[in-house]
Image (tube, rainbow, N blue to C red):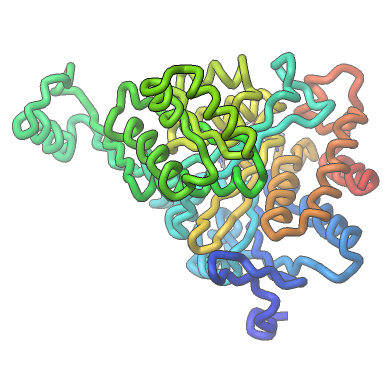
Length: 427
Ligand code: NAI
């Protein structure tokens, strides 16, 4: 069936701040490079089975393959064809396998290009542990966090100048001669990078994080920043976050800044009482932690943090650390979302794993769990729960792919396909 033959009802639409999901939504997917095919095929099988079991034929995903990466280049001469971007714009929700970064293709990263073109400003990474999965920490069951990483700003904006270039010289002269900067230790051999962090960008990210916490009845949002050093970028992010919570969400949140203000004016006992009252009323507690301390916190007191809102670079570090704590990037799901336009692309968070392509060693859990996030985003929770249940059962029966097998005593080694079969059997 071609695009033009589809009735309108089969397209996911975005109206009045909400996505409207028909019973047979068209979902574009990018297979991905490297192990992309190995993991995308089982993900589709498993999601289809879960939807069928949950809704008995009433709902069904119409998968529509769109091209990106090597497959796109071979077919069209372009790494990221316009048609692919248009498909995500048209159908709103999609899923993708990993994409290799083209060498000398004029694009720094296809993932970054996709995020920029659709302005997918939130990178959402839920991190939780599944019983049976090996972990380097003693109580992995205490890790249950949802990272909201800002996706479009910070040093990832790519404003960087290499030492020795006329651009770097211009930047250097501007700072030294016009701005009176004296702290560039080796001006002649310095490269320069610029870190834009805006009020608009910070607010939309923190807004999404607070809404997510409220919708899911999660207890807190932690703003993670390095504002003690970078006062006007990371420090401002923290302040804008608090300002937003105290204005837009004033009836639903209680902030540490408010706590400190009460403490200063009325003493610690009053502040503690206000905090307890807020908890009693199920308000979301908005707090902040400095990044280095936060990385310690994740190991020492993971249960103190629920939703994490942070900037691009911090989010990158935090995502990998938390992923490692619950079993590695092979099983960590993710999504890139623009909540204002209703665009969401769910993705395997690992790379193309060129060293294991075609060996049936790939662990498909990351893209399967991203599929679970997608089902939840569609409101198809019954199907999502089925996949989660089956995956957890498979892990706890110690039947795993080779990446986890090497870390588990007495586990049974399965190929990628056998692992997918086992999940379907356990559903
Ligand atoms: P990688 O994630 O592909 O591989 C790192 C290690 O993890 C390898 O030993 C690999 O075998 C293993 N691994 C990764 N995913 C696995 C899975 N599902 N099951 C079992 N083992 C798995 O990272 P690398 O090697 O740095 O990057 C390779 C390519 O992937 C590059 O072109 C890079 O740009 C791209 N990449 C794409 C990403 C994306 O599309 N989201 C993210 C990261 C890298």
